[in-house]
Image 1 (cartoon, rainbow, N blue to C red):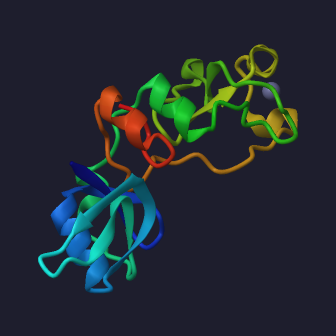
Image 2: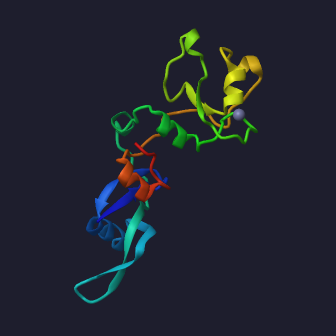
Image 3: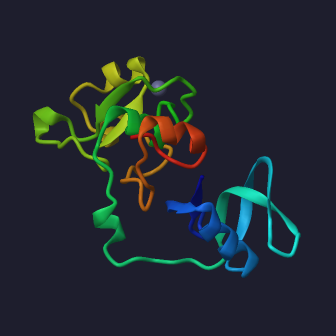
Length: 167
Ligand SMILES: [Zn+2]
């Protein structure tokens, strides 16, 4: 039984055992965010505690090098999750189903977290080989790599799909 551990910022950090999660909650170092159904654990003294599914640290932890170590490999499914499956052009409510290179590949743009966003097919084809500035378009947010988020296998990520970008 694993529990998803979130940083104070709600970024997923890692999976921990339920015992470790209980220890964090009982000692006040973490709070329960989601309970594992109505399951409870009984302490030796007979007290009942709800079994956690997701817990969040009360204070922010930062790991030197976490960004580099945990950086996501770029993939379309992970990009779709980062961009909420929506076209990233401001005020467009369409589903984002195509990957747009902000600096087009024909102009030397890379396939990277910073240079790629989801767009609807209409925006993507209108953009073509132009830059956003040339069209006067803006993005909902500046694209960047998902930081600190952990990668889980698809089977596991569905369990915590609210929190984790699928692998
Ligand atoms: Zn669009």
